[in-house]
Amino acid sequence: MMTTDTQRPRPGAAILRTALRRNIGAMIAGTVLMGLYQAAETAFPIALGLIVEHTMQDRSLGSLGVSLGSLAVIITTVSLSWRFGMRVLQKANTTEAHRWGVQVAACGLQPVARDVDGLKSGEILTIATEDADQTADIIEVVPLLVSSLVAVVVAAVALSLADIRLGLLVIVGTVGILSILAVMSKRIGSSTQEQQAKVARAGAKVADLIIGLRPLHGFGGNHAAFGSYRRVSTDAKRQAITVARVNGAYAGTALALNAVLAAAVSLTAGWLAFGGQISIGELVMAVGLAQFIMEPLKMFSEMPKYVMIARASAERMALVLSAPPVTVPGPERPAPGGDLEVDGVRHGTLRGLKFTVAAGEFVAIAPYQPRAAADLVAVLAVNAAPPAYEGVVRLGGQELADLSVEAVREHMLVNPYDAEIFGGTLRTNIDPSGSSRTLPEAVEASMLTDVVALHRDGLDYAVRDRGANLSGGQRQRLSLARALAADTDVLVLHNPTTAVDAVTEQLIARNIAKLRRGRTTLVITSSPALLDAADRVLVLDEGVITAEDTHRNLLAGDEEYCLAVAR
Image 1 (cartoon, rainbow, N blue to C red):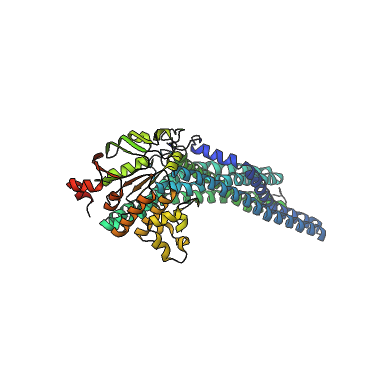
Image 2: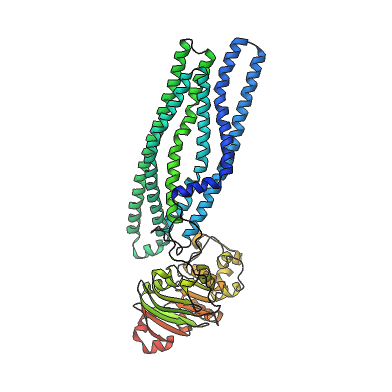
């Protein structure tokens, strides 16, 4: 019961290799341009040394003009190579981050497809944004690492030509610095991974609070909920401070080591010049390179840190992308216009639930316990895949386990009571694909006509994210209109009228029965109006069907039913 999983498991290292392989062309171009930039930057102090050397020897305007022209070429090369090199790399970086973000989001939007090890939607959102961005940074890290190496090598060669001891000092010093920082970067990777996990948990807690804010205020649970968030966010803050402390120690150590190396090169060059072993021009070059080399050394020394951060983020993405399938999808499709059968289902509070809704029938289920209704909706919406429950659900004669999620959702729409409202317009919320042939009828049946009439733009009235500019009843009717406009063979509605007044509810019940005549419809509700409009009512009590009749017959002969549904 899921889309076909063609993706192979991706541990963090494999994700990084995939990102590098997909962007090899951009990385080669970026490496060439950034290497040219670093080489030109390194050539600047070398050129200054040569200018001093030749100007003092020749003392001619021609030599000075050639030197200045050479500097102009170097400066132009530095400017253009940096500009276009970073453009290439950042475009590839942004594109790759988008690819991974979309892939992670696709897994998160199909909760039956993968076992994501208890990750909440807020955590998956963080992985799809921050972790995807940090993983894609590897595309810039490698070219910058190579280009920094080019600068160090060019500087070492130039200094070796002046005196071999200067070149060896740069090479040995660089190896020593990187060895020390490589050890420190491992701590950064583990600390960063823990921080990302805690930030993601805090984000998930925020998402849960926002979704349940109104009910929390209703029963006074907001203070306890906010206290829970404060504890989670405090953990994230403490870990962020730890990461900042580790990063600070790393950056400080790198800067100190680079400064020591630069000072050592400068002092050694001064000592050699004082002894007459190198010329004044070579001294100028050596001191200039010692100052310049700090920047590529800084960049070079930061690369291990970014590699560890990228790997930590890739490992978090692997939690989602490498999660095993919950179940294997089937190849079958349900027969059009078929019936719905629930046979011996045990899930949550359901205890061997059995009932059938014949093709074209309008059936209502009156649940005495709200949790049982939620468990039934989870099974029918395939939010709980067949392996998660006992028993069988058949749609159009085919078991759900033999059908793909796409086939189920094309044939049967399960509209939850808390369906999401998206930013856009009334029209795009009702008919997202723009292909509904029953949009006007759905608007009228859901009694959304008064909302449309209230605004000059009608169906094109702008709706804010989560329907923030609509009342609770308007949001519920908008959700109902979307469900009706889909015009699926089987429609399941869960408490579609809890936020509307009794008169409107009565009209909606009649309209649904009229619009869905001849189509299979199941409504899970305690609304007397909807129960009365149904062909028959099934009473769901303690996880099983305990009574079945029309609404009016049940009212006349079942006192418990009267108490449960009477308003």
